[in-house]
Amino acid sequence: MAAIGLGAIGGVVGLVLGLAAYPPTAWFAVFEVGIPSGMVGAVIGLAAGSVAWCIHRLRAAPGHP
Image 1: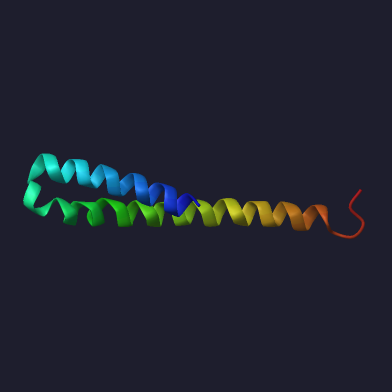
Image 2 (image 1 turned 90 degrees about the vertical axis):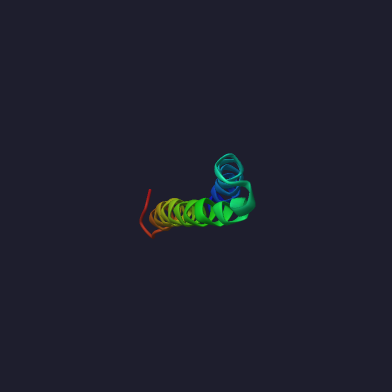
């Protein structure tokens, strides 16, 4: 979800910046800003999911009070 959210925000920001800079090539700015934002979101989502998975595994471990 973080990748989708940050990618969408990055795409909108890229579009706005592209329209302000040079409107005929604004669509390229959507990808130039949106794709890296989506990748950052994917890393954040992976890190958060890994932490949640580890916590779940530790709580479900045998002998855990």
